[in-house]
Image 1 (cartoon, rainbow, N blue to C red):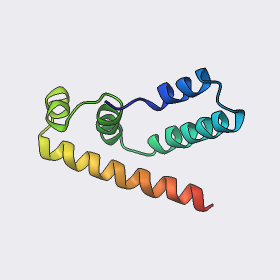
Image 2: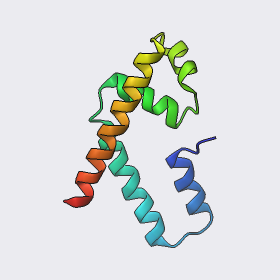
Image 3: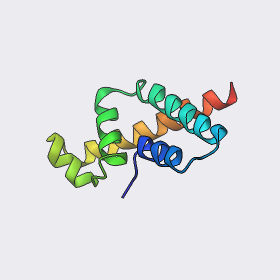
Length: 92
């Protein structure tokens, strides 16, 4: 099961992690949220259902009433765009 980023951040703060770790996770979360806003609504939906909803691709296809191959394509494009956006931010 995939833990959401917010759950990871909450768990770390509960464990009295040092402030630098909490700050780093918070910044990472903000970067990811900003990058997610650059996806199309369809890509974002599939990515979030997969990453945080812990659904497999056939389940996402059924839930969204979308052909499986389209779901696969949306997820692939979402992942590629997120990688590019997050890499660009690190380099700047």
